[in-house]
Amino acid sequence: MAKRRTKKPAEREDGAVSEAESSDYSAPAEEPAQPPENVGTEWFARRVEELESALEEASERLQRSLKRQGELEAQAEGARVKAEHLQDADTQAKKLATELEQAGEQIAGLTERARSLDAERSHLSDEITELRKLLGEREKNLGTLAAEAGKERLALQKQISEARTSLEEKQAALSSVQGEAGTLREEVERLSKHLAERESALAVAAKDSAAERERLLGELRALQQKAEQDAASATEKEAALREQLAATKGEEGAQREKVGALEESLGQERGAAEQLRGELERERAALSALEEKRAALENDLTEARTRGQELGAQRDELSEQINAREETLREQLRAAEAEREEATRRHEEALARQREELLHQLDEKERTLREQLERAQSEREGAERHHEETLRREREEAQAALHAKERALEESLEKAQAERETLMRSSEETRKSERAELIAQLEEKERALHEQLEAARAEREGSEARHE
Image (cartoon, rainbow, N blue to C red; front, top):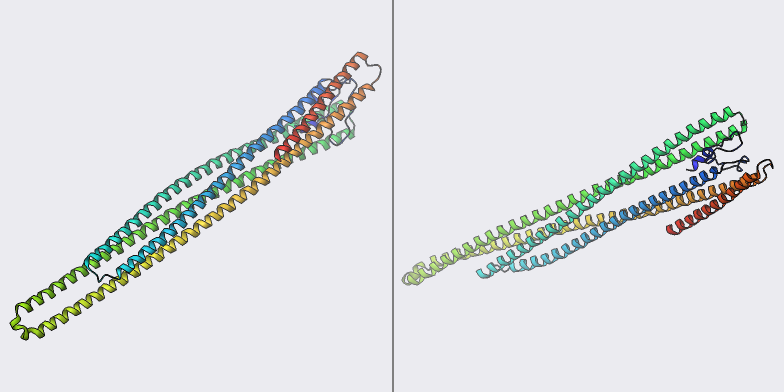
C-alpha cells in the first residue's frame, strides 16, 4: 500500500487539494510539500485509512508467516516420527540377530545329538522330534516377521499418504504465491496507468515546472524498482516452494524403495525356511533308510544264529561258512555306519551353510536399516536448518516492514505538522473561523497519527517478542 504515496496532489481553483489525490501523495526522500492554505480535511482522513490498510496488510503477512512456521514444525515432527520408526526397525533387527544366535545354539545342540546316531532307534526318534520342534519355531519366527513387515508396510503407506497431502498443500501454497505475484503485477500496471493520467493532467495545468516533472519521473522509477523487487520476492518464494515440492517427491520415492526392500527381505526369509524344510525332509528319508538297512542286517544275523543252533550236528562243516557270513555282515554293518556318518557330516555342513546365509542376510538387513536411519536423521537435521532459516528470514522481513511503516507514519506526522504550521502562517485574508476549524482538525489528525505511530511501534515490539 506504500506504493500509492508516489502520486502528486493537484490543486483546485480555490487552492485546496483534492481528497482522492492528496491521500496518496508522499515524497520518501524529500521534505514534505507545503499544502495550500485551504487544504481539505479529507486529505488526512484518507491518509489515516491508507495507514490502517497498510497495518492490516502487515498483520495478514504476519499471520501467513506464523502459519508457514506451523507447517514447517509439522514437517519436522514427521521427520522425527520417521526416525523413531527406523530406530524401532533397528531394535527389531538386533532382536532377530539374538534369535538367530539362539537358533544357532539349538542347531549346535542338534549337531551334537546327531553325532550319537549309533544309539537305539528311540534316540533317533527323539532327534527327529527336536528337528520338528526347531522347524516349528522357525515357522513361528517367520510368521512373526511377516506380521511385523506388514505393520511396517502399513506405516510406510500412511507416511506416503501424509507426504502426498503435504505435497498438495505446498502446491496450493505455490498457487497462492503465484496469484499474489499476479495481483502485484496488476497493481503496478494500474498505478503506472494512473500516474500517466496524472502526468497528462499536470501537463494541461501548465503550473508545474520541469523540476517537478523530473521528480515525478524519479518517483515512477522508484515505483517500478519496488514492483520489480516485489516480483523478484514472489519468484523466490515460488522457487522455494518448488524445492520443497521436489524434496517431498524424493522422500516419497525413498519410502517406496524401503517398502520394496522389506518385501524382498521377507521373500528371502521364506525361501530360506523352505530350503531348511527340504533339508530336514531329506535327513528324515536318509535316517529311515539307515533304520531299514540296520533292521534287515539284524534279521540276517538272527537267522544265521538260529540256523547254527538248529544245525549243531553240521556245525563243524558249516562253521567256516558261518564265519564268512558273519564277516560279511560285519562289513555291511561297517559300511552302513560309514554311510550314517557321511549323512551326518553332510547334514552338519548344510546346517552350517544355512546359519552363515541367515547371518549374512541379517547383517545386510541391519546395514540397510542403519543407512535408512542415518538418511532420516540427515533429513531431519536439514528440515530443522531450513525451518530456522525460514523463521529468521520471515522475522527480518516482518521487522523491516514494521520499520518501514513506522518511518512512513513519522514522515506523515512531520508532513502534517508542517502543513499545520503553514496554515498558521497563512495570510490574514483567510477567514479566521475556517482557519481555526482547520487548525483544530489538523491537531486532531496529528493526535490520531501519534496514536497510530505508537500502536505500530507496540505491534513491532510485540512481533519481535513473539519471534524471540
